[in-house]
Length: 268
Image 1 (cartoon, rainbow, N blue to C red):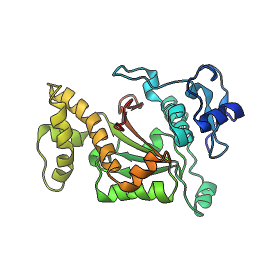
Image 2 (image 1 turned 30 degrees about the vertical axis):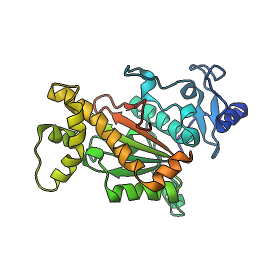
Image 3 (image 1 turned 90 degrees about the vertical axis):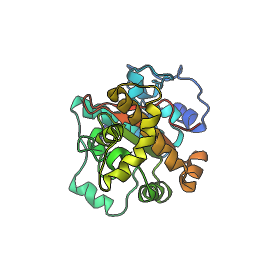
């Protein structure tokens, strides 16, 4: 596993697992390095990450680029892993474990903490973006991060049989599939992908005028559409409603390398 601070804070852990901590005023200040042990095992969560919060509204701040473990419930550890991994990726400190010893361990089974549904675009590799070790991410990639029966079934398998606790739908900037939907042309089987994205484009056209702004808005709406489709699954919906998994939407910036999380992930 990646090297992290392992300072134990039992009182804060208890508050998180019990859901009784309603404010971050008692948490460590951002400059401190105190960490929190999670409910599921002894992996620690950075205190500086725990004290940040995801703002509401449309404004963009540094807080948009982390998942707040306080809001993630059972997926707090997974959220912390993603936060830490993307930070290491951005700083050039990636140290993912792809060793022979880990491969040997994983022959006994897998327990990925996060399902990542994202685009097949070669510029959007989740394992690199999140500096993930072998066995940490259950990755599903399709052009335009659209989902059908096979993809939804794969998510069901991960959350119901492998124990994944976080489902992340991650779009990205300059998405070619969304661009094709905006332009309104596609041939062959690509047309079926574009058809899935067209409703998001039409919705974006209600508020945006230029092709660039329509595409940017449609990329976000397309993520929300995928989240909606996932929630049509009785298996996924039941696990989310019971608090056993969390579904989150996000967008990766191919220029900056940052992952921006949506403040409203479509769960109304």
